[in-house]
Image (cartoon, rainbow, N blue to C red):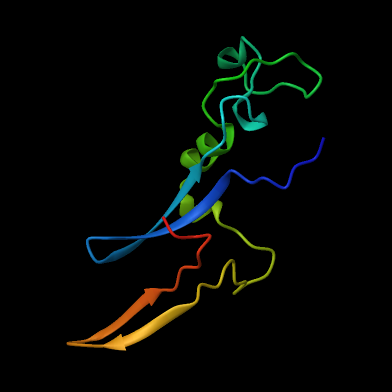
Length: 107
């Protein structure tokens, strides 16, 4: 079964007036990225044919954390745009940029 659901996201956040990059996984416990063999903590790899159990930490999140988000974000072409966010620009005691959210993105 193939799914278009994607639980892994690169996030851009404003924290203390600075832009920070991050990586999140919102996958449920039984998602493929959270399934591992029982003895996975004692080895580095396993095959897709092996029996696995759910509820483990996301391996994608661990991989990104191991190298750091800056080294994990790569593209096949220099200056590749990974995403484009619509924004509004305002000026009130300085220039302000604010993302425009759609009804489906509102939190």
